[in-house]
Length: 85
Image 1 (cartoon, rainbow, N blue to C red):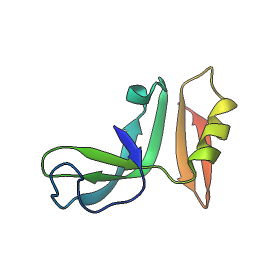
Image 2: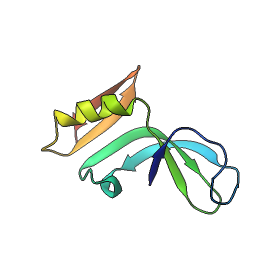
Image 3: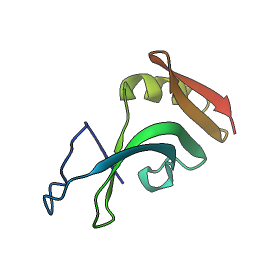
Image 4: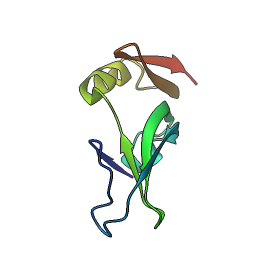
């Protein structure tokens, strides 16, 4: 999983990507027990995904307060809401 800004074509193959919103498990990035809720995910026909995370610094700050337990993080109304899983 690659965290990045919005794009419409996959850099590796040039294919157009489609955007959806879904929940993303952050295990691959080292955040065991963290699920980002309803984030924008761009998918290439070749199967690669790009996850768009708005205000990532605010997310990091919110996660610092709950680092010892599983959480769900949802971006709502301009900010991250972190709740117990």
